[in-house]
Length: 164
Image 1 (spheres, rainbow, N blue to C red):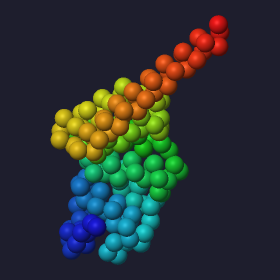
Image 2 (cartoon, helix red, strand yellow):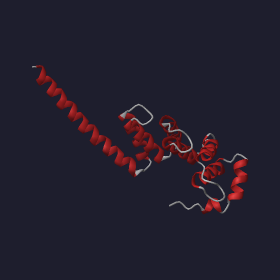
Image 3 (cartoon, rainbow, N blue to C red):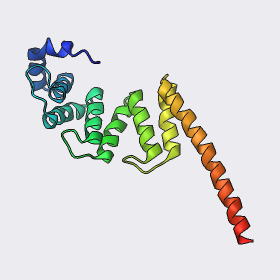
Image 4 (spheres, rainbow, N blue to C red):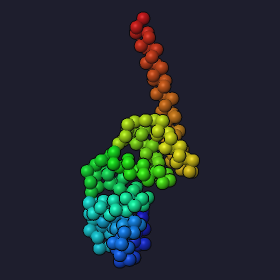
């Protein structure tokens, strides 16, 4: 569970900083709207507006939050491609959770064309930064790839026997 007291205890300062363009504060205002914190009504559309302001400045947490909104249709229409694009920007800044999400997107074809090699690239980047989930994802992909190769070999053998 998240401890939002850091936000709610300092909300007036955060509002002022957000109005002045501070990316961290803008992200926090987005969180307030998304979760209905302090004196903010729960409003996903406004959350996305604030996340976007922050994410456009390269703020890593806002990029992640915005990606999640796009993938889940919170305040915007579901847009897998946009969600993955925001995760990609986030991953490029070193967020291993986003790297895993990009890898998963390539593995499953969520918002991008399915590509196991790119999935493994992103999982490997996250693993190199010490992410345990990425290591599990790599093992899963390799196991899946071996099983897939075995199926292809069986199909190839079966097709040869059918043509005889």
